[in-house]
Amino acid sequence: MLPNRLYDTYMDKEIKHMGTKAGKLLLFGGVYSNLQALEKLIQIADEAGIPPENCISTGDLTGYCAQPEETVQLFQKWGALSIAGNVELQLANDSEDCGCDFKSGSRCDDFSKMWFPYTKGRLSKESLDSMKNIPEYISFDYGNKKVTVVHGNYGNTSEFIFKSNATESKERCFKETKSDIIIAGHCGLPFHQTIKEKVWLNPGVIGMPANDGTPRVWYMMLDIVNGEVIYTHHSFEYDAESAQKLMYKNHLPEAYGDTLTSGIWDNMEILPELEKMGQGIPIYFNQEQKNTIQTKTQKKMANTYYDPADLRKFGKITEWSEELGTKFFDYYGKVFEEGALSAREKSLIALAVSHVVKCPYCIDAYTKDGLQKGITKEEMMEAVHVGAAIEGGATLVHGVQMMNKYNKLSM
Image (cartoon, rainbow, N blue to C red; front, side, top):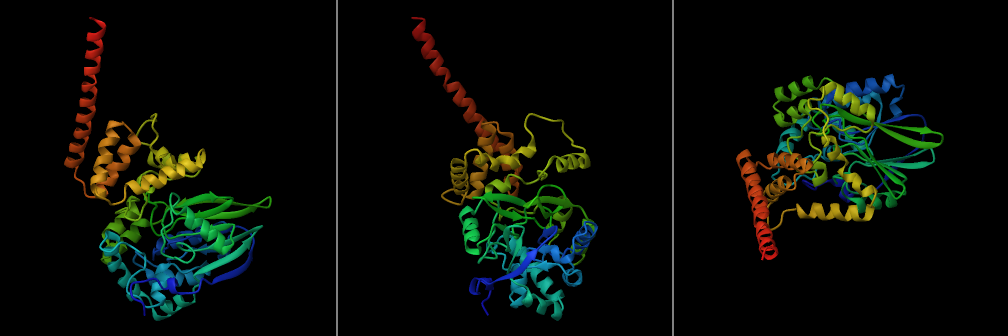
């Protein structure tokens, strides 16, 4: 046995081909033992007339929440398709951790040492044995496209792939699988991205909110219209309070339980800088979703010139200048890595500069980032004063230029 390491690193990259699919498809991932969310999703599929064989999961059926055995049994009774996520691979091989590739000693790593043994201990022998029969990757033909389903990435199930990162890794996945469309999971955030006429889709997860300050969870629909494959993002709310109470009752991480109803992740350790900026900002992919969010929350602030939701559009600046935009985000991410300065120190500097350049998006982003890094309100305010002092001093020192010019002209 290879401890504390994902087995797929040492396995053949076999892709199970499922033939041709027709009709609407429902895509989802990360059930995470959240029985209440799975019950709601099955209801949605039934009401939409989508048969179980057209409902496809990107893996991690079990996880953070309190009902792993009940979730596995319901999923098997439903008859939907799934690939193996890192959790299934680890359970199938009797490993001792979830294989999520969390940084050792991080909050996510510490939490996994609580929920993974709980999950493993609550699953029946039959459910554990069933994990061994789940394929790591599946593919199928849909319309005129070849579609491959992966968890993190092809050949690296635990890789965290977001919209703003891993462009080369995504391109390699398309090439190695000879696919037109990749459906992936693992990262927990819904997105779609076109790369050289290929499409990367992440439907999001249903077991946890998407860090956008709402309790909604996400899935996708695929359909064929006029011979073309189209995709749409969808969200739903469910009985999150019951799922939360069961986590508390079973002494699972309370921080994850709180996330079910707050929609805010306890930490952002796995997120690239661009995705960190989106914390607490409701996600929407069309005007109808935006209107629904505003109606439900009864938008507390009047419309302003700066729309907080625009922060999520930051990544779109690459659309009008892909080469330069991509280089900027590569540089941006590199700047905020640990170096001579710690990530905490860099966050404080960024917060001070945000106030000097008067960017409300940056102020929101680095206030949240600072909270995640344990920066106190006193430290934040002191950093703002440092920025204000430098800005004020810079203004005043330029008064010397005025004085010199005045003296010269008045001689």
